[in-house]
Amino acid sequence: MSADLAVDLRHADTADYDAIIELVDVWWGGRQMTDMLPRLFFTHFRPTSFIAEVDGAIAGFLAGFISQTDPDVGYVHFIGVDPTMRGRGLGETLYGAFFDAARSRGCRVVRAVTSPVNRTSIAFHQQIGFRVLPGNAESEGVAYTTDYDGPGRPCVRFEYDLKNRKQGD
Image (cartoon, rainbow, N blue to C red; front, side, top):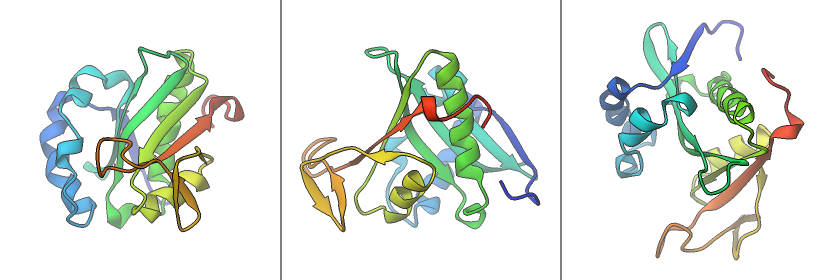
């Protein structure tokens, strides 16, 4: 985290949803992303979803949960950082909070996905320690799984091993 950045980190709340959903498509450069972020993450997954504020304004968020099918797995469904705040450690701070929450609930790994066209997201996840999981196709040297989220919806799949991270790191 940049030393000049004072970040207030807190759990997401249902009341945050309307403000965040207004920002999502803007933060993704006009890509239509709002359909991928339902309100339920801010209502039903509050203990594992987070908001980062800088100077009282939302600067980033993370929506995640613990798998009910496999309680060893934490899953980050969505993470976003204001483009004007990127490169200052907010994304890593949000993931750190999720890693701590997942570990405290007995998880051993965290998984996430992104689009193969989102090179910034791929680079970010790799830079903070996620590994790309095998897929059935490749783009620019990165494996991805075709039709992962339905026909025509490929995803790069990531995994982070929580044993490589101490609580609070």
